[in-house]
Image 1 (cartoon, rainbow, N blue to C red):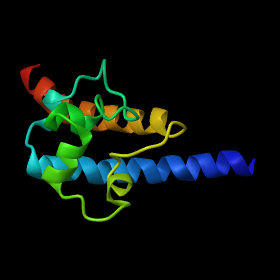
Image 2 (image 1 turned 135 degrees about the vertical axis):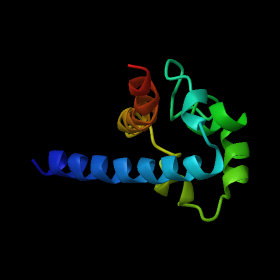
Image 3 (image 1 turned 180 degrees about the horizontal axis):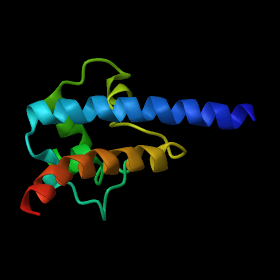
Image 4 (image 1 turned 180 degrees about the vertical axis):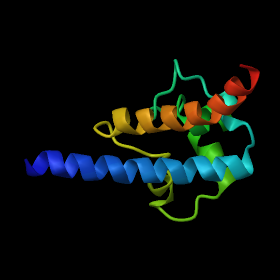
Length: 108
């Protein structure tokens, strides 16, 4: 029971972190969501994560956005562990889909 409570709390924290990272990208890289390939998105792979798809590599993205402290990538949803990758990826997919929906509904 406590493990599932921990996992639920961790998922909420990851969702907040990813939302923070997505908001930062909205400011620094307008339309970023149109440049991320969801079919290849892998947040545990520094060559296929959000930053790598936008800036070439994870490190180049960090340099562009400002790698301020050691925990900055995690607090913005850009860094994860193998065990948190599925939920982190799911959160990024949700953020991307939310940004794509307004453009789709305008045409309908």
